[in-house]
Amino acid sequence: MSRYRPPRPAGTPLITPEGEARLRAELHELWNVRRPQVTQAVSEAAAQGDRSENAEYTYGKKMLREIDSRVRFLRKRLEALKVVGERPADPGKVYFGAWVTLEDEDGEQARYRIVGPDELDLKHNLISIDSPLARALVGKPLDAEVRVQTPAGERSWYVVAIDYP
Image 1 (cartoon, rainbow, N blue to C red):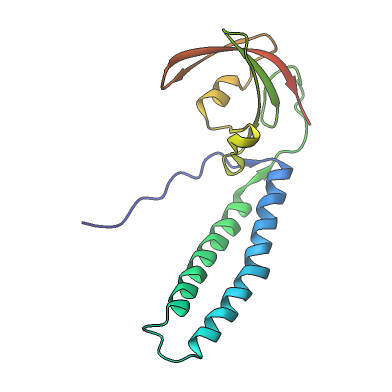
Image 2: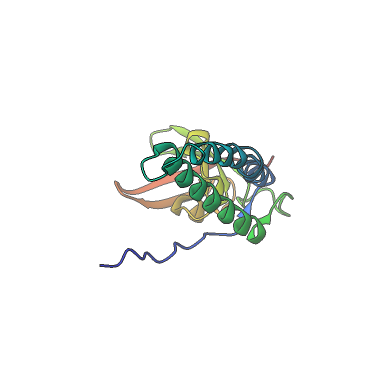
């Protein structure tokens, strides 16, 4: 049985300026801070002698592979991304980068920002443009009803407010 897994689709190549800054900061941190530290630790562990039973050496080499893999991904991804920082021509409709306030049938409100797949963070109410809710919201005006199929069944929300940073 093969261990090969086909690569996942990269998602929509859009990102907000804030998201790009976060990815660039992560790349800088990995390449200029973490990698030199781990490289130093690996060389110190290698100097201790027998590498086959040296856990620090083995762990350090594994960390280097993980860091290099992430750096490679970030460099390729940042090269392919398009930064969307300007406001849309029609700010009365939902587009990429918008903060959208939704109200459900029970009157409960939730506020989400539509961002690129690399910025997805539900703790901060950032939803991916590729998510079913965001796809249903894009292009909708204020007071529009949005229906989305969720695992719990179809739900509907109303667009209460649209803000662009």
